[in-house]
Image: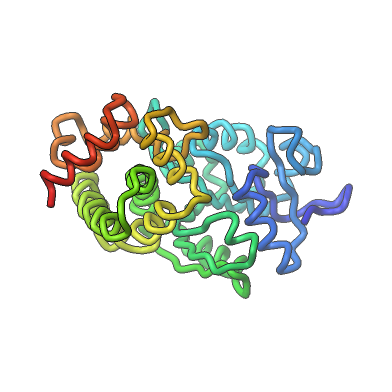
Length: 306
């Protein structure tokens, strides 16, 4: 997967966790020489610093949690070459600023580089195993879209493109938040029929929040939104799903998914006066943030929203 010692790989993956490793596996199968970097010295990387590997990179793939995107981008930005492309797989909101990943990158990255966001159902384990994954790639730069499509061509990652960058960013946030609700439903033993009904309620609220925040319904109901919600919300390998299961048991999640991290800034983004308009979002917030009893809270929600 990694370049030989002393080589200068044109592709650098920032973040060597499950997702970064999965993306690396996909690209290495295609024959690319690439390098992984992670701040955790215990992860499999070349052991080089950012100033040693970033200058040679034509493409930098950000596979870090959303809360780390700003710090990683700030650290790598001074070393980025003119014309480099940053491809960000992170899906979340910054807690303090309430900014989406496109807003963070637009603020931090130098103008000499371009960036793209990747949304869609791309569970790391399935990607690594060679199963088909669906990527929705968004950028304002048409050349960047072609570059990412070409990068993943003839792999198990199927790519479609859009210029609705902010829409993909917010769709990715919302699907994570509502995936927590599906995890809670799983933990409470709800039937497949009930969970199917819950998806319809989540989709309706996603569209409503999107209208409030200026996001196209087509984007929300596409692969970056609804499709990823179904994948993330139903997979035992998803941190959002697992967070919901643990919340259903009345305990704080041991490993918090992006949906939990993004919940508070999302509530602030839509405004407290609008929270009542989205009762399923309110249920997630009651259980995850206000420690409401999961079963009683969900039962009441179902009775009021059938």
